[in-house]
Image (tube, rainbow, N blue to C red; front, side):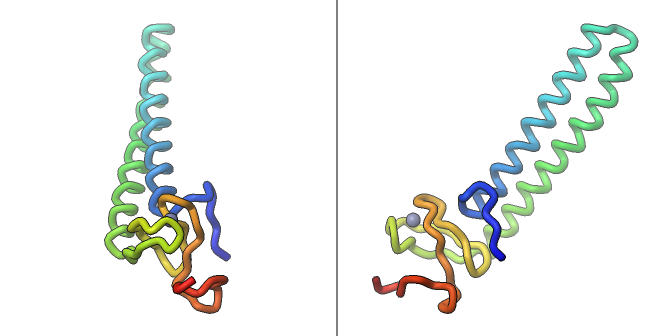
Length: 116
Ligand SMILES: [Zn+2]
């Protein structure tokens, strides 16, 4: 049903994926550049391939950040009943961005009434 890969709020998860792709992209491009230094002429071909992979990874990270931004505009703002801090929810079920409590707008899935 609802999957939480890192046991965190969905918006935070998207930001984490964006960061992972950015780091992978930069790491691959640095490795490619190192290839020129280590192997000279032959390294340039390797570097070109690594640069392309790095660029794709960076483009994916931009897309993920953009998507996260788009989704956060449609997110539901609410105050977390557990920690009383303002948080954002994506969809009907999400985790609090601060205390990781699972929050839901669906009364059928709720285990506690909001007044509790
Ligand atoms: Zn909370």
